[in-house]
Image (cartoon, rainbow, N blue to C red; front, side, top):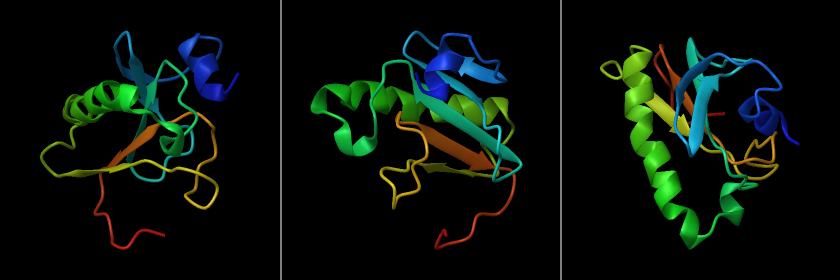
Length: 112
């Protein structure tokens, strides 16, 4: 089981911000911005590169929910960044697709 599966199963505590039957959003334990939340599907999709057309609705609902999460965290007006890492060179560290919601500071471009 990945760390995300253990959080979903409540085997590891997390600061949960939002949850539905399909996904969960919680604060990252190694934040890269003042606001850093992960939005994780409860069904394991190893990485974006392994997603299927049948995952489109779930991934869309997760993206749409990012606005509600950003609202709860007070960054919807100032702005936030959504990031999905896929594969080693993409910065993926946990083999369970997840979206990073980063905010609370100015984001620069290009990212690292």
